[in-house]
Amino acid sequence: MELKRTLQRAALGVVALFVLATSSLAADARTYHRTVAVDGVKIFYREAGDPKAPAVLLLHGFPSSSHMYRELIPLLADRYHVVAPDLPGFGFSDAPDRAQFKYSFEHVAQTMTRFTELTGLDHYAVYVFDYGAPVGFRMALAHPERIEAIVSQNGNVYEDGLAPSLARLKKAHLEPTEANRNELRSALLPAANQRRYFAGVSEADKPRVAPDGYALDDALLARPGMAELQLDLLVDYWSNVDQYPSYQAYLHSHKPPLLAIWGRNDTSFLPAGALAFRRDDPEAEVRLLDTGHFALETHVTEIAEAMRAFLARHVKQP
Image (tube, rainbow, N blue to C red; front, side, top):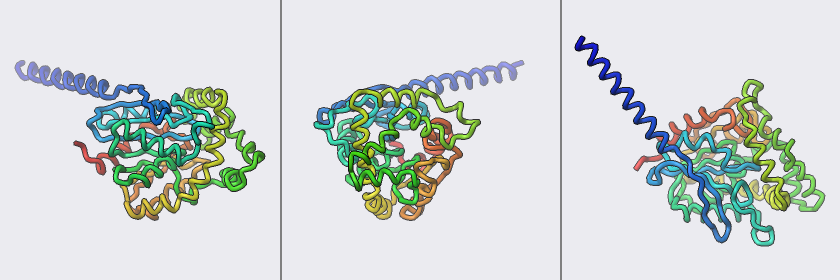
């Protein structure tokens, strides 16, 4: 009888510890929504986790926003200080008039570098996706000492990863005529955005793609003036390809811990781009997932687990 009571007390103790741990985890994982003025431009960002914990900066892509990280943030926030900003002209950040703000990748990277300084991110691991890759790598070139690790999720910096469909971006950059600019307008349409979200996603996984993401993208793109500033960035995109040798030299010389975890069926950035990281950073870890461009929509658990294991090996806890 005494043994039975002892076992019951032990079981209750385990349950109590579990409840305490899970309630603590839930508190730590809450996401806060903030803004900060960066040279007069309001930057919206999502923040979670202990500010004293190692920082993880999440940089989104086109035409999305920090909303794409809504499910990833709480899966990291129990151990890391997670910060996910909206780039200027995206999401809930300001979209200044084109006469007041130059929509180039260099200028966006400068703005985001200043954002990290104003929010106290002096050292951080960075997650780069799509547009977030050239922004993040420009930030790394400017301040390599601040980068503790890189997670690239379909964030390309090698010509190996460029799909043939991106050739019109090169044409618009090298021959910036109005006709070539107008040829890019179809990329801003809802139909094109749905293709980006669903291309390469298996039939079994398509119901996992929430409509929230592309519906929010479409609504924000439809605001007056948004098309022209987004076209400015699309026309400027090939300036990043011109920078690829610099990004690769950074990887070759600094060899930051790097995890490339990609949707292997991406129709814009091919898996060869993920494998190419090993050329300059031989210890780079590469994982290919059976999904498309917006891999977090279908494989957030797998990506979070891979990130936690990777960051635990390479980013020191205080």
